[in-house]
Amino acid sequence: MAEKRIVAPLLAIAAWSGTGKTTLLKQLIPLLLEKGIRPGLIKHTHHDMDVDKPGKDSYELRKAGAAQTIVASQKRWALMTETPEIPDLVLHYLASRMDSSRLDLILVEGFKHEPVAKILLFRQETGHKAEELEIDPCVIAVASNVPLTISVPVLDINNAEGIADFIYEWIKQQ
Figure 1 (cartoon, rainbow, N blue to C red):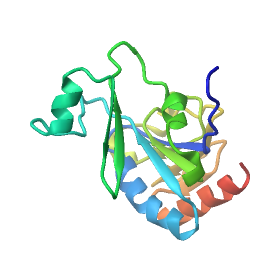
Figure 2 (cartoon, rainbow, N blue to C red):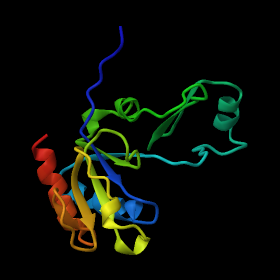
Figure 3 (cartoon, one colour):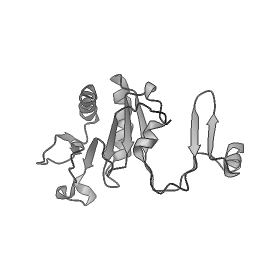
């Protein structure tokens, strides 16, 4: 029987490259913590990444063929799972691997086409037009540096505190 895991609410921060997703998240996380919200984070990358270092025992043991490896210390642990047979990442599966008893929210950077609540980011100087924004039913707001006439709330992308307040109110409704 498959184990059923409770997953904290997911909120994606989605935008074109260079819009400032990581910069905003670095500002939002401490602001959410100040409000008593314990955020987790899932970041999608298009690069081949490795959290371990070649030459370290854990790296060498994992490369020897372990399907899953946990590297642990007193301060943190990381689970690495080899997934060569999985063609696409599944956001909800990844979120279910997180310990939701320690989280109130899982922030997601990327995964913009997943059907989860999301705040889109828009900066006029990135070379995109506001008309290109994909306002699907999952979009709960757009954070922008220019005024927009759209069907969802528009937040000031340069006001991280205002965005954190919006997220706080959204979480209370979940």
